Amino acid sequence: MSEVLTLALAKGRLAEKTFDLLENMGIDCSEARDPGRQLVLWDRKENIRFILVKPSDVPTYVDHGVADLGVVGKDTLLEAGRPLYEVLDLGFGRCRLCIAGYPEKNTDSVSHAVFRVATKYPHIARSYYGDMGQSIEIIELHGSVELGPVIGLSDVILDIVESGSTLKANGLQVLDEVCDVSARLVCNRVSLKTKRARVQWLIDGISGQLE
Image 1 (cartoon, rainbow, N blue to C red):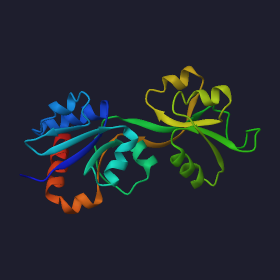
Image 2 (spheres, helix red, strand yellow; image 1 turned 120 degrees about the vertical axis):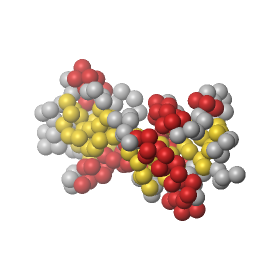
Image 3 (spheres, one colour; image 1 turned 180 degrees about the vertical axis):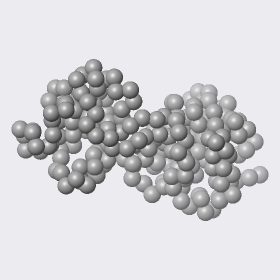
Image 4 (tube, rainbow, N blue to C red; image 1 turned 60 degrees about the vertical axis):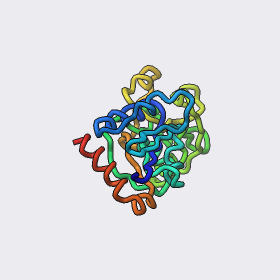
């Protein structure tokens, strides 16, 4: 029997889109699509194991080698900062990672000592402003980040923007785009060497579906 390949997938839309690609390759994802309370799911025929985890945990599982490959948003990948091979842009889950706030607000116009950024991406925020030589205070929020500038908790936000309707409804605007975001297939560095044939088979198969 071929050696086990383990895939770490973010629960929800990214996993469902990934299952579509895999099923088109002939991989059985029926158990993974309906896991119940199971945490580890299988396609026994192809000897592929699926683990469904929180999006922010995908890079951790792949980095530590308990998963050979994973599917994760580019935003989560950048925030994690782990040494993974990013092998494919899968093209779904597209949005933008942006700085947003009131158009008149900038680092020179604040009345307090330090420019405040509300975000669930502290690593990306520090890197973005650090590259510009700006000192900031991070306000970590994990829900309704747009509320930060509205009530004066922060000067701007760094967050995912899809349609921009929530920003517009609250009088906020995109001030700068940090990067484009979409789902990425990532691979553990050791797995790419020790399971090269199996890993390449999966990468090539998914790539073929994208074309």
